[in-house]
Image 1 (cartoon, rainbow, N blue to C red):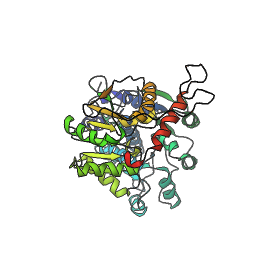
Image 2: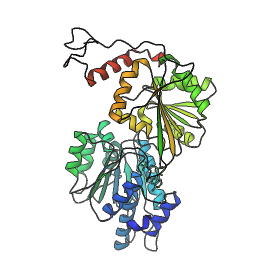
Image 3: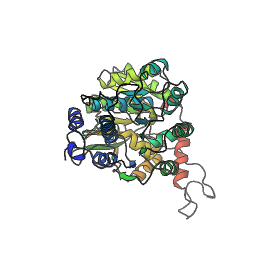
Image 4: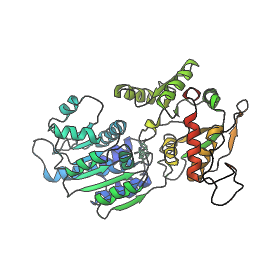
Length: 439
Ligand code: AMP
């Protein structure tokens, strides 16, 4: 099905084709016609599903339709579309997609829509300058958006289309208050598109309060933008001793011939430590985490995209929203905290129809936690052993079970078995007890 048949203008279909989008992904096929006819949307979708273009294309189309009908004769641009995102990286990425897709939209009576991207952690002045003369589309993180409104650099009273992208992450990061303040500045008469990877109660409540008779769209949580054929993420789990993970990682990088790898770890310290060890072993590796300045973070991502770094060792900061085309491999050096985090992490590979591999390193201490993630994911992977790296460490004994007189082994007495939560806590306690040095 071509893009044009979804109701998009030839200029937008052309811009999509130039980005290599030949056919819409499932979420695009559902969302684009719904947005074009003015409906609110409630979409359960991950990064990797093609969700950015699913809102960007119809947002641009609606903006174009409006400009054509109104034929504005100069004057400051008024914000028509507001996209609220949780992180600076996602803001930059969404802004880039909007600009690329909007590039052919100039006509005799209208110019290309002006897209402004604003986020915190950098000086506000250049952003205020960039907002002179207004903007048509604003992509923003909530705190900086409010700062700019307070500085009178931006007015939100003309917003007709609101997009909340990664709403679950916005709430996770504690943006609920800022979000409410932003919402209070918007006209009640507007269209709202709500995108979230997960829908815990807090997110459902927010969605229900914002949306009017929304079209519901659910795309399978495969974390790929495959429209049906070749996308695959090969998932592997390898058993290894805690202290030998870096050596095993080096071996895998070499043996598997991965040109680029994103390695996930639990702490900033471990990111630094592992990146340094790899670097000393002559692998171009660099850390990425929240303690780096915004400039350094942008630089690392740009250089990784440009293939200047082979390995980026990161905390969960890079687990969501970051799109690095053709990333062949993701490694969980430390396991993610939850099954949802697991999906986000492995979604960094196998994007948009490409194949990728996601390898989880499972230590004796983290094995119970791994099995919980597997169970939640409906996975059952063989726990591989690599010659020379067979685990020898002994798993820590689970803590005394509540009500279980016989400790960890209660002989299978119903009611005193460790619950999932107990097992998870035990695994987390074991991980926390591990010296950072060993990670
Ligand atoms: P997103 O879920 O928006 O982060 O998009 C994930 C990736 O899919 C990005 O690299 C997009 O460039 C790519 N993509 C989005 N839509 C399509 C499409 N229709 N065909 C091919 N790739 C796409």
